[in-house]
Length: 327
Image (cartoon, rainbow, N blue to C red; front, side):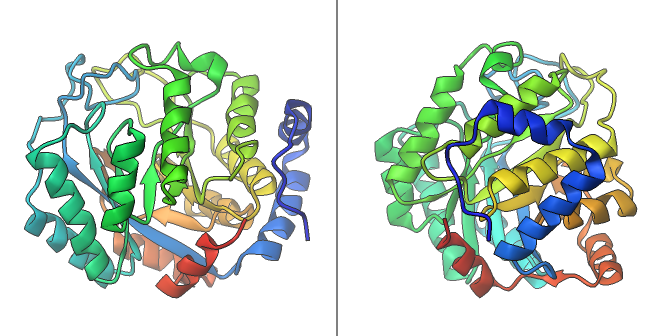
């Protein structure tokens, strides 16, 4: 079995990106089968519990208050609204509910206390809970841990070198600091990035290198393809080619073998055949449900149909819990 390594060099990762695609997928598939059940896919459902009005200037994001986009600003959802979304997700096969709020960083007060209650209530339903709320202090991470949070999502987006060309209102180091605060609190980390931002292959190398050399790999690594939104600075970017998506999945699987690698935003641009190659290359998790925060996504029925064609099945909750113990 390939050992879990944290000492990957950029040169080694660059070599993976330069490898013939089918050779790369072949190796990634072997690594995947050493660490995971290749017939199971973990389902997560992402709900935007507070939409729009974010003060950050992330160039890809429809929720930034700095851009004129089709997204309307909405207040924090009630706990009961979130629980209804969780019931639907659970009934359709999801084992994790991810709750996203468009904040730079949570502030103490009523909304923060309500998010903590949402976490407790989702856990009580027998689902895993995940939130993405922006930057966190050590104290905030500890409060989420005490509420029983399973995972915290905080994507690094891209390489350290390219980051400043996409976001200027926070630094790359701020992202890493939040990940460290989450891990100190004993919460699982969900952290990945986006391709199709205009980055180079070397930036993709840097993105993978950052995650693969963390002292503890993320429990989940979401790989997103940019979904261009009118009104954002990246609103006219072309779609990512499917082979680039597959290559990213394979490199993530080889370098972080025990992590769940998640097919995330941009799946609607992939054919069923391209998604099948992603699963072969090591993807074993998806976001399902008709929307991912504010962008379109395949629905539950569509995903069940695809998994049936491929002979795959939903990963049960107990299997997810076992995966979190690895690394």
